[in-house]
Length: 296
Length: 125
Image 1 (cartoon, rainbow over the protein chains, first blue to last red):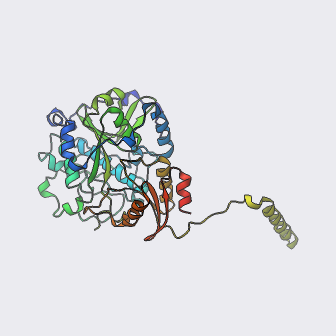
Image 2 (cartoon, rainbow over the protein chains, first blue to last red):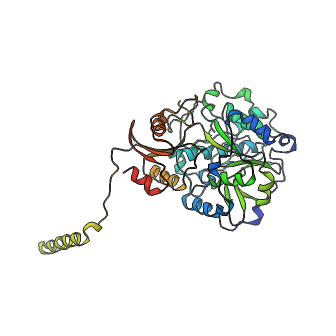
Image 3 (cartoon, rainbow over the protein chains, first blue to last red):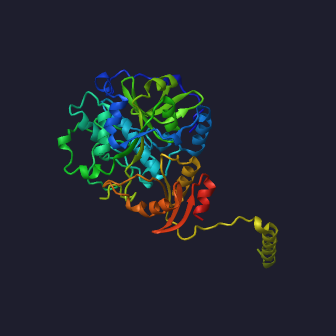
């Protein structure tokens, strides 16, 4: 993964024409203070030990290129939310899965690839979450989107269900379609399902897939540092929520796996204007046995 | 092939072996049946060195479970995951960050604050 390669200008600062689920009606209250409050005891300030001087970012980027340690390297699949309004949860699940893969100690040298399934995903315990399993509670009316503060709180409090499609047959007792949108080869699509129709006892499986700690950067530079240290930084901007997952040092742009099976980029200017209210998932719950992720 | 030819080849191989001497690479098998490697750290104090992450990825692909464990991580019930209890106890005793090498439920080796791929690889040999 080369963070010094040229970027197609058409992929930078893309504003999507349709409502993806993070319009002004839901994003207005996502202030840094509100987000920290919702994260509760899991909220963490930026650790000083993770600071990297900006003049050293390029060197760190080269290291990440060489060792496959970008957050993007821990993302082993795309999702496709189209035409749903689930963007906040598609973003969150990329970060949760990446964090989990990082804890598992396995990276994916080329990151997510459209139409491709890594054999390693099944071999090394990657679990694919269902964005719909969170969104259906935060937005009971299906359309209209979700704010980040409630979405994060839910991932902390009760966790998410696994997608019906997994890279390995883990034998989950409870699972859900990944999205009410289209989905793709690595994400099940399906109809809308309200919380009241979730499979009975679903909480027993979801509790194994929770966010434990979230770091809130205090500046755009700290947000870049978190990405340089292998953590996705979740942000809502321009009506759409996404996870920053790779810093392009030469062009000063942030790459993200968009929930439309494509990698797009935010310019430095967008990063500087959007970092407030962003956060990184630092840790997620780990299983007693990686081959049996929900202990079932 | 005649017996004389076979004898000639054997003599040549013997001569080659002695000429190379200690230059012939040796394969060192993992000792003590290493079953797991865990890098245990506290995120407020340190980041995981990229070369360590890279080494763990390699070890995984070689068939030994190699993972990263932040000391506050819990399982779905809020407890320290069973598989990390021994490594975490060893890490707390030694001081973090630390690489803990396990053979089943026995701690084979503890390496303080490794930062290179070589240091990790040597720890499992």
